[in-house]
Length: 322
Image 1 (cartoon, rainbow, N blue to C red):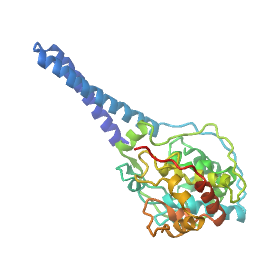
Image 2: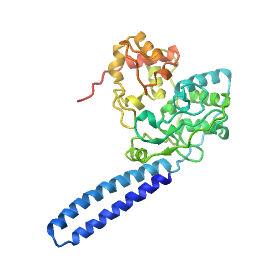
Image 3: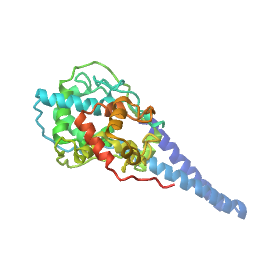
Image 4: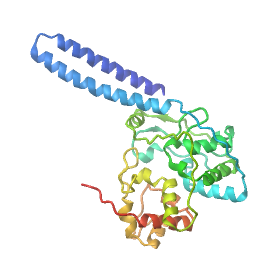
């Protein structure tokens, strides 16, 4: 944080310097120097002022405290609930909170690497019972899943993750699993945001959205239907990489080069889709490349995966404009 504030102060200083140069140029008695200096210094002042404003807004949005909605959940912790939570955590949480995409969720790799941009050191923490969740209540964990905000009001990266679209039942199952998973002692590197990340936040590209108050979330009955498939798309956050229309139109910091699912999947049979998601090799023999998390998607059970296929296969193709 100190480094980012120092950069912000330097930018403010540059803005003041160019503003002073405008004043100096205006005092000149030579027309070329006067008007040339005013225009050039004026343009640079506007440019650096804009960058300074965007950076300041991004830093404010990242570091400011957020109101924390009160919740009151009762986690039963039944074997069935824990098993459902383990399944969901393996599909949803392991890609960030594990270095190999498998439980235990002892902390992941630098998420900045997936974006291909220097966004800072973004390591998802250890969320086994030996990690930071040992100091959090079930209500706290549920609230973080839903809002991305810690009890202190500090924003986490969960604020940009659509795990909040899990149904209340599924979110509670994840909390039940996290609370009952094997504890593993492991420290992850501290998180630090780069100025570029703050700039992206300043122009609204981080998708920070803290719901307040919380609203109940339900899901369709678990079945091979387009409706349940759409629910799976939401909680998998497919739109985070493939764009809001799933046509590959996501903006940074989403990883570049995401496929247009509205064109590709309708051309696949169900067997083609299952093969691609379960083996990482599509029907043409092409190996699906990272950061596409096919290993995580492939961990969906047969009903979830087939429902996902039914929804994606039924999408109307969207052809990107050239």
